[in-house]
Image (cartoon, rainbow, N blue to C red):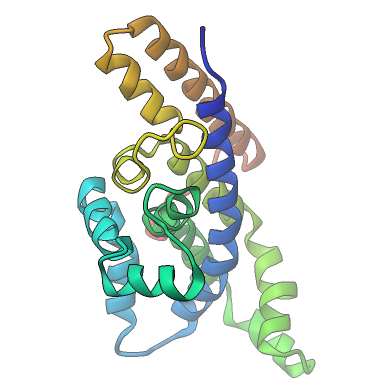
Length: 225
């Protein structure tokens, strides 16, 4: 019989990660779309690294960074009492790092394509940069925002390598659906592995279908589309 706890934990992880990523990605995307800084290509490359690096590579270095034996991990434990290894909080932070380009790229691409006259008109009317972003620019890129939200959510649900490296396999804490599938396959319990897989397949398909319907069939994955 299927245990729904890993499914619900996956949904919780995806929801928390997506919400936090949105608030982080909007200012980053806005800066990338308007900046002419020399370090911009470096920032773009760092953000896009998860698209080409194997998840286990990112998971390994995050494991080293978050370990209580490292400088960062030791400081977090001693100062904030926070241990990120084998915890839900660690999964959230790792998922945010790994899914960052899936949120940033659609928003960045859409902001880059907006006519400069929108900003200029807002500034002429005395609006601040922050007000212009929130009330003028973002309302004009709703499809791109929805794309970023959905991609980040779906990508987090399906992640395995980073989740396994950082969270391990703790029931009720870090055992998400992808880990549950792996466990069942290792135990040669293909029926239950299939059940988990079908649930994730239905969830992801339903989410993507709703976006295609909402965007009228246009689902842009990155700023080059």
